[in-house]
Every structure is written in C-alpha cells, then in structure tokens.
Length: 140
Image (cartoon, rainbow, N blue to C red; front, top):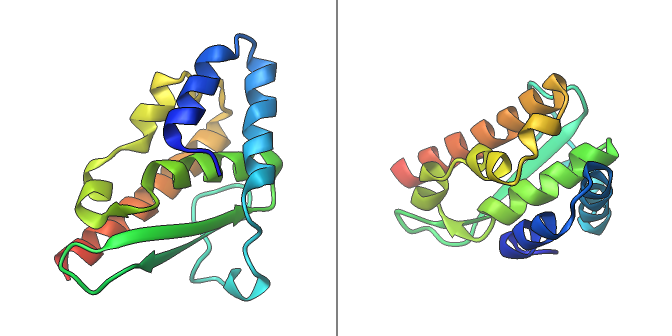
C-alpha cells in the first residue's frame, strides 16, 4: 500500500481530476480485501451511502496503543478513499490519531471539493469513527 507521502506527491504530479480519480480507484484496487467474517454490522461505518467497513487492531496494551486498521467498501472510489484514510491513520499511536484530522489532508490535496456531498459525508463519517475509537483507546 502507498504511504501518505507517496499519495500526496502523486496527487501533486497529476494535473487533471479524471487522472486523480483514476489514481484513487487504483489505490482502492491495491487495498487488501476485507475477509467476509469482518464485514459485520459492528464494523460497518454509519453515515456512508456506500457500504464501508473498518476494523481496528491495537498492537499493544499500553495507555497509548499503536492502532492499525483494515477497511473495505463496495464502491470503487470509496474503496480508494478508505485506502487514503488508512494511510493517514494506520500504524500511529491512538493519541496522534485523535489529534489528526484527515479531512485537512484531503482539503490540502484538493480532494474534498471534488467529492459529491454523499461521498464527502461518508469520508467524514470514516474519519470520525477512527478518531473516536482512538480517543477511547487512549483514554482506556
């Protein structure tokens, strides 16, 4: 999977929005498929028009655990957005995740303004869910 730095650099290199959308779709295709047994109601993100599932994994039992995430969607572009969100958050400490607003990163690369309102709302729902979960893990 691409790192956040690679994604930001690639977006800067691509001038046309159709090329950027194709790139988002390619990021989604590179995302490992979420096993069927993890596609549960508990893992489903509410507020997304498409089906989106997110699963978190604390890597240790510390007060500020490192969290990794798996995710998937049934829509190509949304699956690419999931890949970018995971690049922003996965592998970071819960406290850092809670402080990081991925929407700012999406704004910086100009992606939010080119998303439909439904996709933008779904993106916000994904980010909120991950940050809320990180806050809970950091407070536990």
